[in-house]
Length: 106
Image (tube, rainbow, N blue to C red; front, side):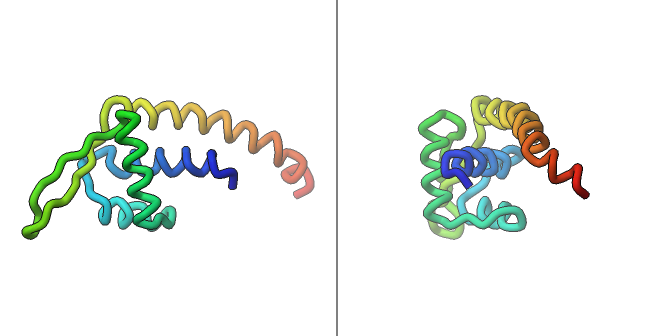
């Protein structure tokens, strides 16, 4: 898969993982694992990129005697999810065009 396309998809997946409630790294990976495999190093790169783009905010809170970073989606992040949904319609249209001959031979 094209690296830029995959990056965009992963960004939206991470935003979707924190859309309904604040979350932290391990839980984000766990919540995404039924759908996509994501390493810790990849996740933290994505989280930093999304923070820099104002799509999420970060707060630290003590948990079990240690500080844990919690991530919260912003209005910018929520808009990105909605934009993705619209873009996906176009991607599906392109997919249907590319595979139209495949479906005609079934």
